[in-house]
Length: 208
Image: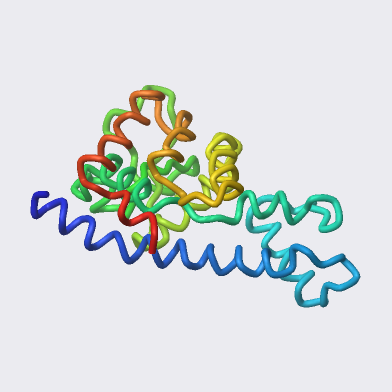
């Protein structure tokens, strides 16, 4: 592994793990109350569930009618190997203009004028910008939230749910299958993510 790659992964790894641990904490709370009936919930527990429902774009969830199941499908970690691989691809190992000037390592777009940096080769008539973040941590958090809430990644979350049900490690190689809508490259993008994971032996980071 080159020095550039090592430096990139050394910088990113603790930040990704920290954000995943935040999600793990939220998930552990939901698991701790999953088997209760609604009348057993304290007011603070109900309040926390509602806040998580709003955060994960399920504001109308009903605790008594599969609400916690729906929420648990979204409140879960993203494999570290996949996060690192996508960050490397999307940011050219942290060297892209968007990584350097906008802390954007995952190619996130925004649509309000001035919300980010205008791509130099943006198609005529397009209005998107590449979103500017205050920190890399903020970019990681939004990227994780996007995969956990956007309907484009329903299949990714289904793969993850099945791995959980089978008591298997959340594998970046397996969850990459759900990235079909992340890039216009479609299947080739999935292959590229898996190749970066394999070549750089990133799967070892999926357990921590």
